[in-house]
Length: 375
Image (cartoon, rainbow, N blue to C red; front, side, top):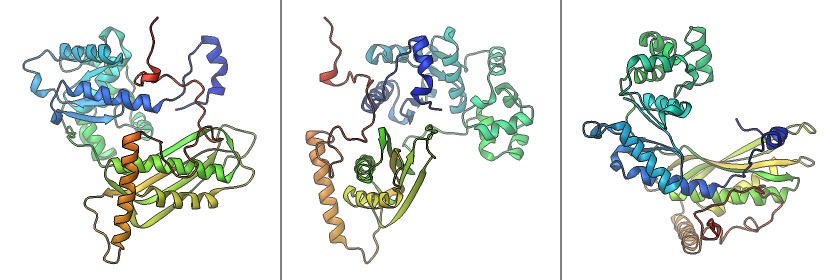
């Protein structure tokens, strides 16, 4: 759960904590390189990119020829040498068990970054599971944790020892699979292709309060362009767009304001001009005078593959073709000259009132002008 910096000011000063602003370009590039390094140890079919900083690797084919613990340390060593990136690896018979092993590796320094539950004796596993709350199991949320606790299932060991039939009756088939996974029965396969996105969100907090409707429109126009860029990179179309605005939830000097509107498109689109026009028109309805807005954003939903979409019989295909050519031209310009070299209106001009505060931005050592220099 995020906490605003001003609430931690005394703690930061007391312990001399280093504070850094978010650098999304750095994180994205580090993630790309992280995934590329891991790909050198398995085939494409054996790698599942789970999130920006997590990957599943199927090591079944390597178990007979390699010591998997040593193999994992080899991966960690390369990540450290090539990227300077600290990481932990959990090895299990199933994906859920591997996630639990990863949690154990993070919490126990004596394991030196690798926890192999496959080779660990049961008594040691039992001792570890007994010390871990059941809420740490992958897929068990707060609501399920409360119900499990009411059934005297408080630790991971309690959960592993529970009756699968009882868990299925009291919860769901999904929870039943989670238990079977922790008992070593694989129910969740490695996904060779990423799941189709259900939505794309683009939003940022402002560096200072925004009171102007025009400033909100500028900001939301930029976020639409960011969202559409991701939409087009995955060859998707958007069928519905949601715009939202909110004030600062931590500011007790004024009432909290949080509102959103949605718009269903007659034909799904990936045109940033059209979607920006819709989003800014919704801002007119969302805006309230004398409210200091702290954040706004857009959500693109009802996504579908562009290649398989069938247009209505009465759709103006000339208009669709013209839109595609325009967006392709914008993509070509950005690919040739870099991101944010061309944009809509004033949204990409520097030093706007609504720009995110990034006074403590961490350097991006993957860019030539920010490389660390040694003297």
